[in-house]
Image 1 (cartoon, rainbow, N blue to C red):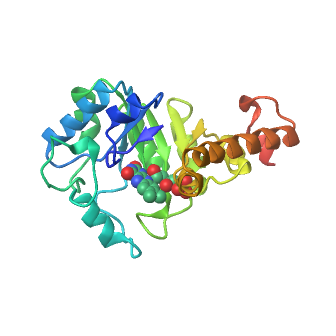
Image 2: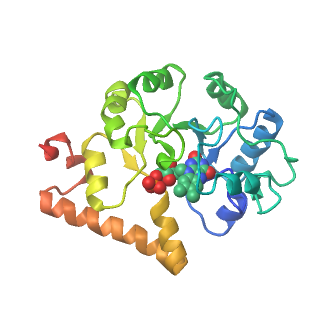
Length: 241
Ligand SMILES: Cc1cc2nc3c(=O)[nH]c(=O)nc-3n(C[C@H](O)[C@H](O)[C@H](O)COP(=O)(O)O)c2cc1C
């Protein structure tokens, strides 16, 4: 599970409630004292991986609920557990962030650093140069830069650039077992989901989240049986031919 910086409950509360193998997603604030506070909170909760989201220097053009989101993030209308006691109203996004942030993270926390929002081979190579431990090929579910490519289109060039040296994950539009199968076949080490668990939650609460995950798992197993592969490592590009 990757816990967002802007989750209602703090990462510590989520781990205490039974969250296992939790990673912490970071929106770095321009005020690095606040960022350091978030990192401490994640480390104290036992997180071993920090996921730095790099596609959100500012919020994208969310015509449907953009203003509401901005209002929410001011922290008045909803609880933002991770920021409690360490932030007083300043912005949570850093438009000035550069590659230097990776070095800053490595000197300011002991967690492994994964970059979320990598969509080109060029940036994947820069990740390797800067000592990043893993990447998530993501376009934020299409919620940031409009007209961006689908992540499955970006995946091959990122996989090629990374060349097996660090982990490559992908999210965006994973809705079926076949979507997982195709991502793995194109070289992803793992997939992530954003909206499907929210839909399960909205419809049936906690059991809906479990059901959404179970469906994806069951479909992947079925697809593997139909494709004639017996282990995840057997899902290779040749399956797509
Ligand atoms: C309601 C909502 C909130 C999100 N919040 C965050 C966030 O706080 N941090 C982040 O890095 N990505 C966030 N994302 C993007 C997701 O992490 C993920 O990249 C995207 O939803 C994946 O696409 P999918 O929803 O098609 O599976 C959010 C997406 C949605 C739909």
